Image 1 (cartoon, one colour):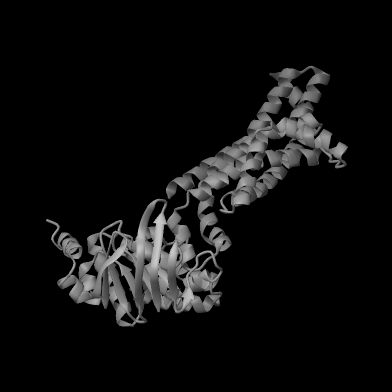
Image 2 (image 1 turned 90 degrees about the vertical axis):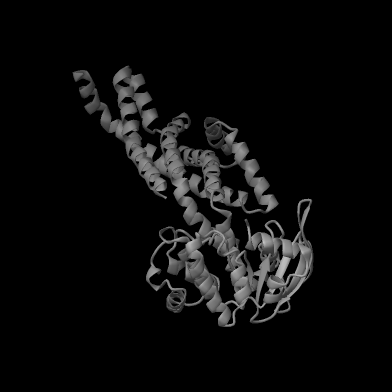
Length: 217
Length: 243
């Protein structure tokens, strides 16, 4: 145990720099996936054939490709096509795109859960599609969407470790580097696991809060 | 003011409207009665373009109702609708529900809309409920807010789709008396209803619809008291004397 505390004080500063990158990757890809997911979902429910088809197809393609392959593609293949991304950019873009599919399906479920009568009432006072979405459907869908959204946040936090495969020195990669140079596997990976857990706990509490609030109605 | 000529409408293979021709004059109150599934609600929903119709023509003050044309917005702001299940926006207060259309569709200044909204809520007897959310209101109160919301658009006519069918019996009266007041004030109203008492007292004309056609129509008193057609007689007997 004493050895673990000594290792902790020694490795923590290095691991903390990994934590910073983990948070940047998570927040960056969360924002990107939310924006893209909302666009896919709105296209999907637009009732316009081309948009619906495009969105449905795209979501299936994204869902069918492993995140790690998507990351490799962005980081190793895109340069050959003339688009060079930094590892961090590729990580945020890759995770953002990958998760946009799940975000879209979540948003779509929330939108479709809204009573048809709400949409008719909006139409009956002359609202167009966009105003109906913005003023009537989306504000109500948010409540339904939030609990699963919180779960997606937790999954993204953990999946940000996949960025290590394209050299982003986030928490998992920092851990691996320290472990392979010091052979203190137990201390290092226990620490890494605890740090992920520590970051997850606020999110888990947030999900619980969302669920309670959604349950009230 | 509202004219339907030979309107046909099918859902899939089922033809629900088989050539409806009718008109509603300005200031008139027309009640549509008939068995469920007869196409009553569909007529209302076609008039303000919530449903499309397959053939025939619906005109509102001479303008054709076409739900896929941009002109539908203008028609909907002139012809309001009150729904069976109220369909208030649950995330907005009663007052916010009332001003939603004026502010976000007709672009009225918010202060003006608020002022008018309060007057309308007072008119339906709910001045003190302005800041309540729909789930906090009874069905009858919600429906009266919905009527205020319809009035806020300053419509030329209001369509009522079974406005009291989802209400507990003791709450029906409040809603009907608000509607009666509107009728007395000269509002053009088309009301799909099972409230024969209301139809008899308030309506100028009654249309009896069965199987997607108008079986009988005429002044309310004569259709309800001396129905000519066997199907009308049968329907009224069932409604008025269910046992």
